[in-house]
Structures are given as C-alpha cells and as structure tokens.
Image (cartoon, rainbow, N blue to C red; front, side):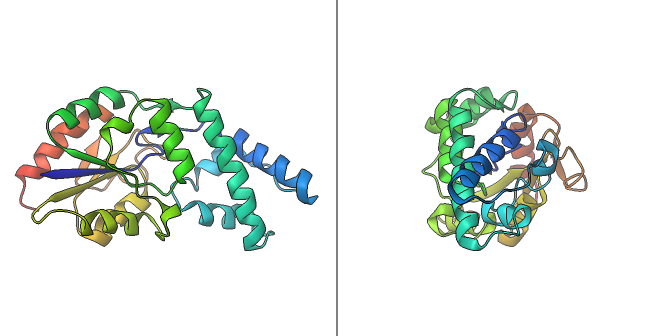
Length: 222
C-alpha cells in the first residue's frame, strides 16, 4: 500500500485571493480589543511565508507582539480565513477533486500534511467535499511541531512495508520528505511556482500529473 501525504496550501487549495483580507480582518478585531495598531500586509508579502508553521508566520510578521498576543491574533486571522473559505473564497487547484477520487478508488491512502491550523484545513476539505478521501487529520494543533513531525506521526502509525510519498510546492514539503526519508513530488503550480522545487527528481506541472509520477516512484529503485 502507498500513502500519499499532501500539502494543502498551494497544492490542494489556493488562498491567494483571500489571505491578505483575512489577516487584515484579524488585525482589525485584535486592534479593536487591545488598542494595538498592526502593519497591513499585501497578499504577496503573506504568500512568501505561507507554508511555514502558522506560529512562525505570525512571529515573522508581528515581532512587536509577545507570544500570548500573537496567539490571539493568529486565532482571529485563521478564524476569518476559514470563514472566507466556507463562504466560497479561494479556489481548489484545477483537477484536484477528480484526481483524488481516482487515487482513492485505486486504493491509495490519502492524508493531509499541512502547517495550517485544523480549522482552516477542515474548512477547505468540508467546503469542497474532499474529506471523504482523507485519513483522519493530524495537524499542528495536536502538538506537532511542524510538517516533518506530522509526517513522522503518520509513518509511526503505518503498517509494515507501507510506502509514503510527500507531495507539495514549498521547501517545507521537501524538508518533511527528507527528514522522514520518503520520496517527494514537487508541484510547480503552487504559490511559489517552480522556484523552491525545480531541482527535485519528480515534478508535477499540473495536479493531474501526480498519479503517473506516483506510479513512476513505485516502480523506481529509490
């Protein structure tokens, strides 16, 4: 059996058109409560750090806040982002639903390996009717430090001889694969294009390329 560990942001879903609005909404609510004005970031500025664990993103963007207040801001921003997803914001990457359905029918196990919060991931998978294809979620909220730790948890729960493949669009996805000694498929259609994954062995130019690459990995000596 082969398990496919999918990144979410940039691989399954594109939040680029709502993320700046969500962060601004979180900052507005936070400022109204605590009287602390915060910088207003563009979508491009935020997308540079999407893919990192959310607490690290907020540490980088809001270093003027202590850990307690950053956590409050994070929760407000992620709540706003999840609400926007549930209201139709963002978009599925083209080909996701059909490809996941076909992979599931062929017997592949599919799991989410994301640095996003549980609320955000659940909003995406529920709104777009994808939960049926995924194993129970393991997320950073469950006290896992990062994406590498999430993948490690899946591996520890796997049956003997089970193969794993990590699929994503960012350096954090490469790191999760390398840290756990599993193959990696890089997605050039993600938030950063090919810039972070262009030197990898297996590259998907579109989501529909993934099944053929999975088969190639299964047949290869790696």
